[in-house]
Length: 137
Figure 1 (spheres, rainbow, N blue to C red):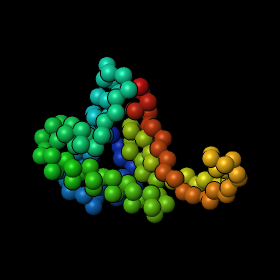
Figure 2 (cartoon, helix red, strand yellow):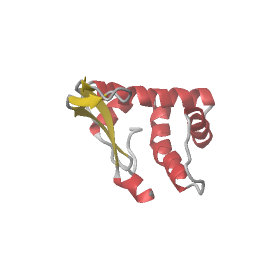
Figure 3 (cartoon, rainbow, N blue to C red):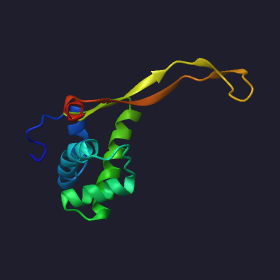
Figure 4 (tube, one colour):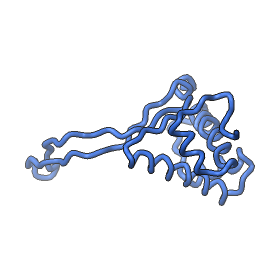
């Protein structure tokens, strides 16, 4: 099966990957650690990579066209967002886990007037880096 490899995968990630094609899954396994590791280890200070730069890096590393790389990245983001919307977490071994955190309602202040205002409870995405990513840092 194309999902097998040295790094064990979380069942949520496997279920997401089963919806994608084989080349996309292999791309995701490779680019997640490679591109992020390169960014972290780069000698430049305050590096920010936008989406088009990420697409270029993934296309180059995986030997894909930019259109294929964009499709793979969009599929990955859609899959993660879809799982989070369902209330599930997505764990990628060696990289990290995405989950949903709930923020309680609270009282804030209008920065212009200083008047108190109520901020509604909300759900926000949360990312916790995995050991592999922390070790790179």
